[in-house]
Length: 409
Image (cartoon, rainbow, N blue to C red; front, side, top):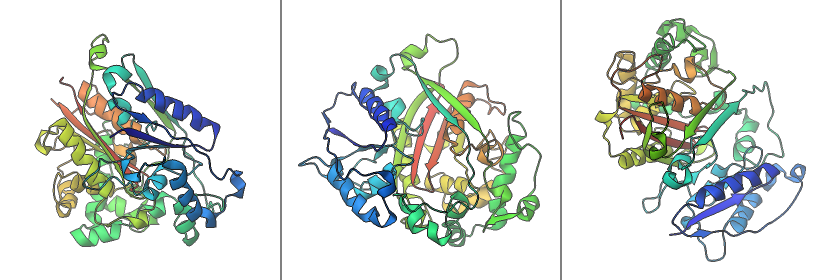
């Protein structure tokens, strides 16, 4: 099957993105099919909320070349924001990456390293010379920000008008069902923040280092039920960088290299209310096993684990959906201390988004902590760690990426 790129660009910056994407794919020993077409050129302010359905239909017209079916598309590159999310487009193409007969959709090629394709598209050729992957980010906080009528994305138009706008009110939507189904208690959910603060206390760069208790968490200010202040990520500025190159080239550098063993990625839906089930993330359940399979490892081989934690429930979803244990055991597993310093499964060892930092997109910092652990230079170093799994989420369970790192070639 040829690798097909669907590129939908609305502003000049997207041209640069497409150029990078095409250059990145020139080294692939696979056919490349490019079909270009424009449709419905309009000023942005002329796009109104009630045109979303029509826009989605046009996406199908623009995206698919004659004779090309949507199931043949395995990469979508689209600029966002402010243009429509590539996840939205993937859903409209029926490409959510969960069908048994198709590979998971490869998405957000240029989105830091959250998309492992940056490091996996024939890295021996693509990265024969070192490449720098940057994520500069300044957190932006909107107070009482109403949804814009000309926003073509789905969530502001179908959720925003009912007061569900922004992560603090969107991420909690699945949590109560998850807690009820699996018997997760509020105390267990609070324990996630408590344990991660223990890790943050060992990290000099962490924003929040003072010890907290379950009672402290449950007595903190309510944000959006059941999340209280200490169960929500920090709001900070920050930035990060990673240098990617081939394994052979890495031997020329003085520092110990870290190798990518396996990757997996998937998408589900741009609207959290439309998840297949609130008891699990389909994107998590697809991305994780793919990475484990490619790496050729089992869960018992994992020495260190990072799970993107914008809110306290994400490590619980991650432990279950990645297959470390049944979902009903995840809350007790953390509350019993199995992920704290010195325990059997070190989790979010930099303090995570709950206590280390969170600049609006946290994936870069989780990746950096995995790399530091594999190099043996992390502030809270896990002794003799040889394999680290880093698992990320995009949007509110909209997408997911998993990378397996090792310090042994």
